[in-house]
Length: 261
Length: 240
Image (cartoon, rainbow over all chains, first blue to last red; front, side):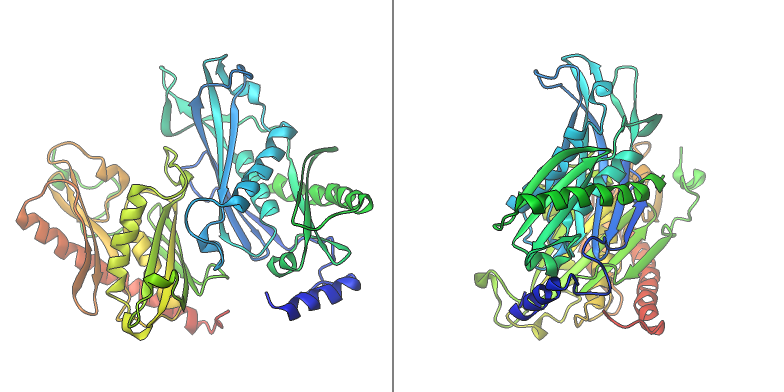
């Protein structure tokens, strides 16, 4: 990104304005969620957040529970910074940014108790369902954590349990009436510090003008996950500001998610 | 039982492809992009470039370097695929690149490279052929100078029936002669086969008949591809 664009974004930030249109600092870009974009998945969704495009899908597998949680199923989230999404992303194995992204999304879902893991236990200590949520970034225009988190939640909300045969093996391509036990809607909201202002839903250019970000994942009245990123820092007052905004933004996003089916 | 007598599961004629949907310009960051749906197979393709070749040692001083990545989305298949590159996706990336290269004026872009990415979002057989159609459309959308658009289709044989564009259910037929799958890519402007693979068992005569049926189907797909490209400009849409 060139220095002039960065200066421009910083100048505008001083007056609480942002680069494009009349979007306020707390406003999200237009959010469109498309349900069931891939029919072989247990559940899937496409999220378009401005020009950022992400698809997420859920697959269920039967595995062995962890020894310390013998009566629970498990969640595995993974995502990549797919090279199709951005000229600057490199093809190949996920790098550190992609791993951070997956782990932040994973933590929010896991810690909020969005999935009733005990319902996913088939035989304590022996067999339980694993929930595998994978997301693919198709176009990067910033704020990937929020877009991926929303896509993952939408896909989970839509996910059906696969049918199993008499021996307890999955019948691929057939689903039962039962849904994946999804009971809460945790939403990650990421705030970018630009100059001394806090921006919600930064696009790619704004993100590059920012030195620090804070992701706050909330569900109902709780904070379930935090992640501070970037080399900059936040004051406690700024953290309070992010927390307050995060609940408001979450409610709006939950509204959009509640409409999909 | 004979598939010639009983006909195909989805009542298609032997030389009839599944319904196809094509659109271009679907990804804002790419120079060119497309979405192609062939029956229940969905591919999104994106092209970056031409840009400076890298790594430097792979640069060609008199021609374009093409990098091609075929990626099966983990939840595109009923039995989840492990995310990331596999031996299969690496091979498919290579054969698709070899096919597409024939359609591009590579000598017009010395020291440059393009990257072609194909994401299989939903898979129901024929994904490499759908990926070639999508990639070729994305290349045209990116304004890369080409000899022509390149359609592709799987031709083959189900038991005793020679046909085109097999579905997953058809590929899985084991009765009688079983299924033989022969993906081809074809450059109609030059009447050349640019991708040819085969899985199964088939006689020499049947193979040639199948390939001929495949090229006829490719010509029809080619027409739809041309209309897709023309449609964008007829509507007076400005390139982003």
